Length: 128
Figure 1 (tube, rainbow, N blue to C red):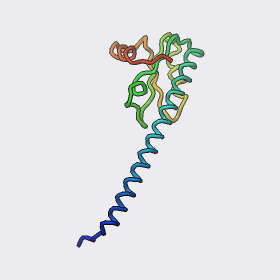
Figure 2 (spheres, helix red, strand yellow):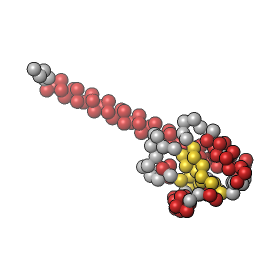
Figure 3 (cartoon, rainbow, N blue to C red):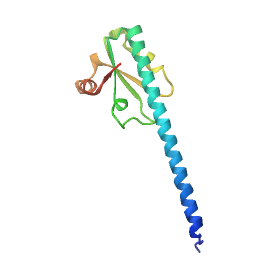
Figure 4 (cartoon, rainbow, N blue to C red):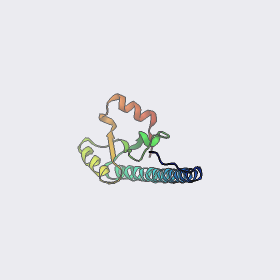
C-alpha cells in the first residue's frame, strides 16, 4: 500500500533534492577546474624539463586539454616533443610520466609518430 506524502512535504523534499544536486554539480565543476589548472601546470613543467634536460626544441600539448569542453576528471595529458635524441626518448618519457601521480602524462616523439598522429598534433597542438 503506497504511503501518501502531503504536497507541502513533497515540495520541501524536491527543493532539498534540487539544492543537493546543484551543490554536487558545483563541486564537480570546481574539481574539474582544479584538475584542468593542474594539467596546464604539469604541461608547462614537462615542457621545461624536456627542453632543459633532453634538448627538446619544441613541446606542445594536444588532445582533450586543448579541446574546449573535452577535458574531464578522468582525462590524461598528451604532449608531443621535437628534437629529443633517440637514445634519450625512453628516459624522457619516464621523466615526464613521473611528474604526477594524479594525472597520467603521455609523451609522443613526433619524429617516430604515425602520420595521422602527427597531423592531429600539428592541427590542434598548443606550444608550451
